Image (cartoon, rainbow, N blue to C red; front, side):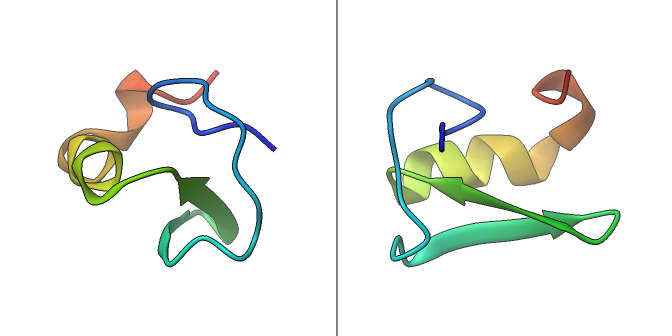
Length: 45
């Protein structure tokens, strides 16, 4: 799967994740997760 912020490849083992509308998104880093959490709609297609 792909980090929605930076498009890096990530797995479900990543400790960085957020849920939006019942779907879980995984991130490569805390920085990407923090950016996503501020404005998730910016990164969702």
